[in-house]
Amino acid sequence: MIPITDTHAHVYMRYKSDDKSSIAISEIKDIASRSLSSGVHRVLLPSVDSHSISDLLKCVKVDNNIFYPMVGLHPCYVKKDFEQELYKLEKYLSLNNIVAIGECGIDFYHSNNFLEQQKEAFQIQARWSHEKGLPIVIHCRSGFDYLMKWIEELPFKLNGVMHCFTGSIDELNIVLRYGFYISVGGIITFKNSSILPMAKSIPMDKVLLETDTPYLAPHPHRGKKNEPSYVKYVASFLANLYGISYDEFATQTEKNVNKLFFPHL
Image: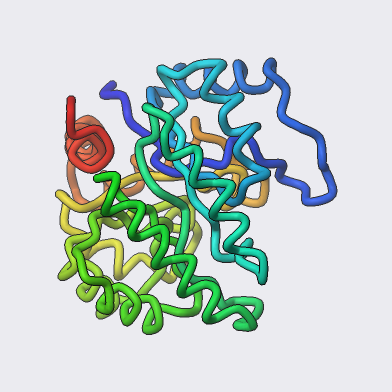
């Protein structure tokens, strides 16, 4: 079996919002072990704010051959103090094992109270991506047109991925024109998934895999805590969708991952 990569997993986060405990080293080791046993050899870890960094880096310290860090401010964590958050995060950009900036972007699903702050936070992180030569990992929920306008206004071209993309075919084509990769998660495996028509249209050389752990577990684990080992279900579903073998699909997605996140390999 060809090993695959979970390009987006918040391994350090708790599934239940009222659980404030920090992830234990034993838990990290168990997740790493199950990942490897399931054919998942790399797990990319996006931060959401400055408070998430310590547990994220704990995962990397436990096993830096599996876990790789990203640095970013999630749009749902963008508030009036976003500049202070970005200042705290910026110091981590000097770490030599960072693979991307993210996740960052736009989220107006619950509220659009911080429209201007989300825009400025995204533009600052886009500049980090450009200056550091790192790909950007973009979150977009209920704000696609705004996001595309923000990207269009940038004085440079971005290189990155639309994570857990759930847009329409028309929106997919717009994103592809910007050169972005498209990351697909467990939603694709849900019965009568709304993203099925769009997913069929993703070019093979632009598709990536993710779990978005601990959320959005794929079938047959839907409604339960997600983890990187489950990304194999997404890979299997997409391989069938493309009409190719699992190993053929895995080989292609690994080429895509290496080109975007590990160009030195």
